[in-house]
Amino acid sequence: MKRQTFFKMLLMAGGAILLLPQRLSAKSSNKKPKLTPKQLARTPATKPGEVPNFASGMLDSDMSGLGPDGKPTGQRATFTGTSKANAKAEEAMAHKMKLTPEEQAILDGRDGEEKAKLMKILVQFGNIFGAEQLVDLGGAPHSNMFIGAGYMASMIKMLDQCARAGLKSYAPYTVNPRPYDVYNVQNNPKDMTLIYEGYPLQKELDYVHVRLGAPDLNYRTCACYLDEVGNAPEPGTYVAWAESSAVNYGNSVLGIRTNRNGAGMDLLQAMLGKAPKFGLMTDEGRQAKWLVEIKTSKEPDWGVIGTAIGRKVVEDIPYITGLDQYFEGGKVTPDNLHLLKAMGSATASSGAVGLYHVEGVTPDAKKLGRKLLVEGYKTYIIDDEEQKRIVDSFPNLWPEEDGDPTAAFIGCPHNTYHEVIKWGKMVTEALDKAGKKEAAIPVYMFMPNKVRDRAIKEYGELISRMKRAGMHATNMCSVSYAGMKGFSERVRGVTNSAKTRNYSSIRYFPDEILVKIIVTGKIPQGT
Ligand code: F3S
Image (tube, rainbow, N blue to C red; front, side, top):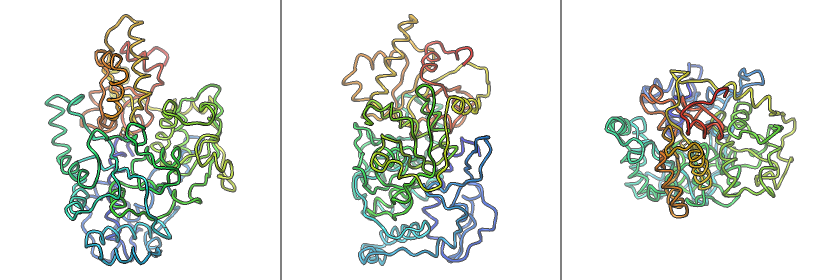
C-alpha cells in the first residue's frame, strides 16, 4: 500500500468501525475478498442480520512486520493496539460484555434515542474486541476528527445529530490540528481553491466540535499533552484518545490507558463517558512481547530507531533498554520529551505501536521493570549497523530525485516550545555564520498556537528574526499539507519527522543536515 494513501485509510477505517456494529450481527461472509477503501465506500447497505463483506477486513490490516531481512513476517495489525491473529467477525460477535443496570438503562433508551444508539455501537465494539466491561473515563478525551472532507460526511452527520440532541463530551476535549492553514501557508488563490473544494465539510466539523465541548482553534494540536495545551491526564486514568502519536505518547509517557481508537470512536466514547476495557487498557494488554536493546555507539536517531521498532513489532509492545542515559534521573521533562515524541510517533506510523516502555524512564517500566516482559519474549538489537540499514531503506520519492530541496517541514507531531526555540536558534545562528538573512527554502514550523504565543511572549526577538528568515509558524497538520493534490509533484520537501517521511514523499534528514539544507538550499555532498 502506498504510504500516501495510508493516512486517509486510517481515518476511513475509523469511520468504518463506527458503522460496523450497526451492521454486524450474525453470519459472516468473510471468505470474500477484501475490498479497497474505494470499493468499501461503494459497498451498498447490507440487510439487517448480514455481516457485510468488509467486516473481516476490519479485524486486521495489511500492515505487516518486517523481519531482520526486511521481508514481511506475516504479522497483522488491528490498529486498536491489540492484535487478534486470525480473528473472525462472527466469532468476535459471539462475545457478550457484562453491563451494569445503569448502562443497560441507557442502552434501553432511558436517556434518549441518540444515547441508546451510541451505547449500542459501543457495546458491540467492546464485544468484538473481547472486553468484559465498560469503564468510566477520566481526564479529557483527544479526538482525531479533524478532516472535513467529503468522505467523512456520514460520520460528521451522525455527530451533528448527537450535538443537536444536546449530547456533549463528559469533559472539554482537545482535537488534532486542522488539515490546512490559509493564513500562514496556503495563502494563495490556487491552494485556497483546492482546500475549499477538498474540505467542504470543515465548517460543519468545527461546528460539531464547538457543541460537543472542544475549546477554540488555538488549542488544536496532535501534541495535546504539552503544558501549553494541558491535556495530560494522571497516570492510570482510563481515557478514549484517538491520533496514533498522541495515544502512543499518552499510554507510554503519561501512563494513561487508552486504545488506539479510530476517528469518531473517540467522540462516541467521550459522549458516553465510557469505554470498553480491553487491549492497552488492561494490565495484561500492556505487557511487552519484545525486548528492544538500543546499542548505538552515540545518541541514536530517534526517528530512525522508532521506525525500526515499529517495522519490527508492528503493534506489539516493546520494552526498550539503553535510552535512560538521555533522560537525567529518568525524568521526562519539557526539554527532552521531544525525543520520545519523535521515537514514539515513528513506532506508531511505521508500525501500529500504541504503547512502549523505556527502562528506567516511562511510568510502567519504572514501576514494574522487566516484569513487563511476557514469558518467551523476543529480542531485537538496534546497533549502528541496524540503524544504518533502516536509514538506507528510506526511498527517495521525489519525482526529480537529484533536484534541490524546496521546503523544510519541522514538527510532526507538533513542535514543543523547547523545539521551537532550539530550531529558531540553530537556523538563525547558522544563517548569521553564513552571512545570510534568509533561509534558502521556506521552513514550516508546525505547532499549536498556544506554543507559538508563548514563544512570542518569551522570545519575541528570536521569533521575529525567524519570521524574517522565512520560518513560518503554522498550527496545521504537516502530513495533511503534504497530502494536498499535486504536492508531491511540485514540492521537494525535507523533514526531521519520521512520521511525515512515512506518509509522504518528503525526505528524512537528521537535524544537523537539515540546518545545512535550510541555509544553503542544497543537500550536502555525501549525505
Ligand atoms: Fe500531528 Fe499531523 Fe503529524 S496530526 S502527528 S502533524 S500527521
